[in-house]
Image (cartoon, rainbow, N blue to C red; front, side):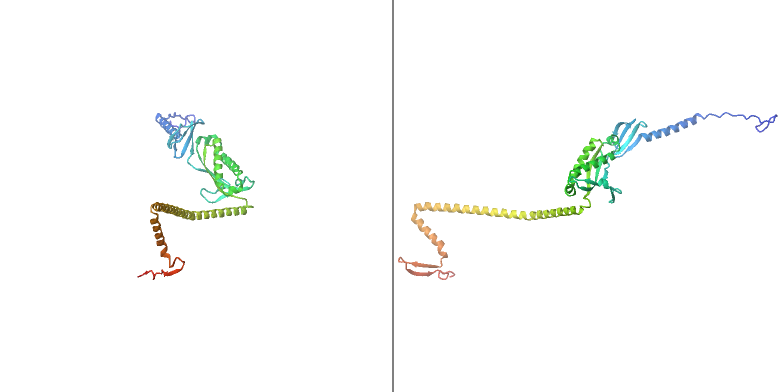
Length: 334
């Protein structure tokens, strides 16, 4: 009798229930292996990570600091109980004050007036746009010592800059004190960042632009133009000095050398004259008549060539003869 047949009483016989066979051991093993592989894959993704050059990984275990990994390459940490926090320590970060660049490297920007307006030491207003560049020096301090370190850095940077600007007059800020102000702000800001343990190093502070308010801008532009004219005049004077000073020094050296040579020559001549006089004096003491005659003849030799006429006068002061001593009379040219 099959299931579709009815019994004698007109009722359907009860259906026979067959027991369900439990899964085989092979199937259970397969499922276990798949689950284990999935768990292993998940744990591998959580425990193995890549650290690039210029990056550091701060490792925490159960939320507490464990160590900082600085070596680039494939790294390992314990899954679940350890967490990694990667920080790029080679990137140069930038904060802008008084303006915001619309995009990195673009020349367009928007002005932030409340950051740009500052009070100077002589109680004037100046509009200054500036920026700071910094790097992360201590990854752990940067991540955990201060909540939102970039916001804290922005606050202390603005405070430091306003304090330094308030110690200088407006004219100095607009003209020749920009570099000094930048260095002063950088040193002051680094001291404060170290005090708060921000874990950063200030690379540079750049004063992009500083202008007086529109009401006095024209007057300060005139001052700047006058300073430029002064610098140009000084440069021209320096150029003239560099061109003519060596020539004057050379001429002075030449005159000194000529004077020294003249001095030496005159001294030598004087010493020679004295030596000659002393030699003649020695001879004169031995034979005065001969020396006297010799000196007389030497005098005539020196004087007569320049004489044109000779007058012979006798003992009674009478002119006896006139001898013209011109070239024809002396026989010159014969």
